[in-house]
Image (spheres, rainbow, N blue to C red):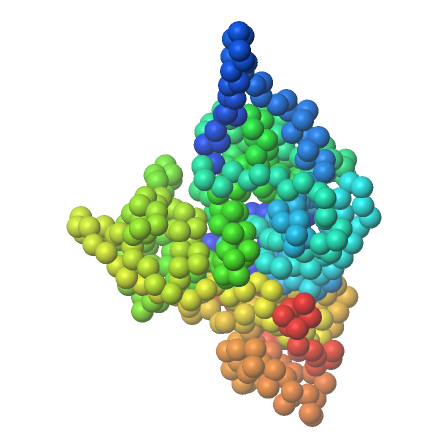
Length: 454
């Protein structure tokens, strides 16, 4: 599984994105007691099923996934990877997994269950906020496979026994056990922490309650070099996405226009630091978001807010504390850009696309960035690198893919190479950026459009 990279993020902060679990890199109810009254006999109490039973079931609904990324956008890398997933809708042939397992780039994806050969899988949805995705295989191939129950309403408490199921290090259909160790929002999104061993190949697989067999989370990542400090995305958040998709409603998160304070002591508070587009939602610096009116009365972090707003972007109201007073803010937000509609331009082995960082304009960063450079390509020979920001082509400023395509086409009429002005993080002690001019080989120019290719 690929380790996520953050190119523009190096401009703003050395933020390390999270993704695959490699060693590199909700309160679930106790099973109900069934009382049967027998004439002349004391009530009999049904015994909870064993962990062996839960893992045996997981053997049926857990899938193997393999992906070959042919041209990676930022956050992915070229090459082959393997992971896990589990069936969530047999009638549609839908399998849930991590987005980093199936990638958000040009890729070939296949899936297979324990008794079946691998089959082609189509990416139905890749979430731009959570590390979650749903892929589809031929529904005829999932007929008869039992669909596991997901814990959609509550998160498990610390100490709840769980089992991780997947294919760690290529050891297919392996189960490991542990407990829920905590919950944290220290990373890009809120995750459950577990000491159940999770390794490369477990990504996207189920984290199962050992009390009732329900899936409480999706195995996602680990801390490099740590011992049994692993993380999974709660099924509470996954269920919302799945249900909206099944209803034909767009589950996309909102396009977040703000950034929040990150407290060292992890105080559970969503406090606004900057809002870059207040026209959609008039949040101000210092505002504390308490909840979404009529939906979720207490909100502690961005993940919970995004969860409450999915499917409600056309109109909502927030409870906000501003200057010590409680107010309500009405808002509308556009959906985040769809991962499977990403576009880019490939020229000289260099893939250029738009920046995905909402605070980029705050430091005057250009909107176009190099996402990938093919090894051995003319672009690599010209010393163009991932993360380079595109300023201009032959003296002509470019601020969009359309302007870039036009400039390249115009230069291509008379030249084989065009000078490109780049901005790169690291300008010495007195500047954040250095500026470079490099010869861009005008070969192999093509539009990369995931929506069209998909």
